[in-house]
Structure formats: structure tokens, C-alpha cells
Image 1 (tube, rainbow, N blue to C red):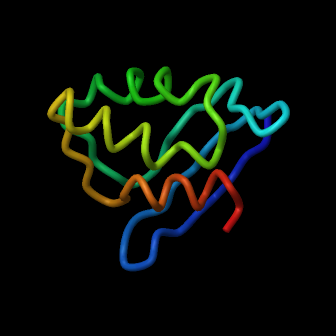
Image 2 (cartoon, helix red, strand yellow):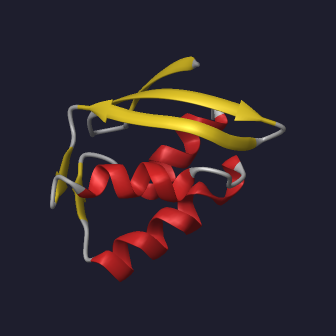
Length: 87
């Protein structure tokens, strides 16, 4: 697995363990200095990102946040997508 460290502008540090095959996320673990409420939703976020393309991370996470009423403090869906894509 690849380890990614991404400092969100004016935000927190994301540490991501990532395995991709042909632009699809196969495994992902998200850690860092951020807050997610409810906390147990981090597993659901990671599961929702498996088998999707890197370019679809923002859209997928936005849908999940809205449908599951998740609060994330310290990074945005766009930040996570940038970190995964390497931008």
C-alpha cells in the first residue's frame, strides 16, 4: 500500500494508506488530525470509496455525507480527492 501525507490548506493533515489498480481504489485507510461525527462513519467512508475511480472521490463522498448526515471537520471531499489523485 502507498502512504500519502497531505496537508490541507488552512486545515489538517491527512494520512492515507492507499492501494489502486488501474485508477480504481482497491483499499483505503484514512487517518489524520481531523474530526468525523459520528466517529464510526469513517469505516463507511472508506468502504464507499472502494472500487471507484480516483476522479470520483469528491462526488462519492459528498453523496455519503449528505445521505448519512456526516460532519467532517478538517478536510473537504475535494481535499481528499486531491490527496488521492496526487494534486
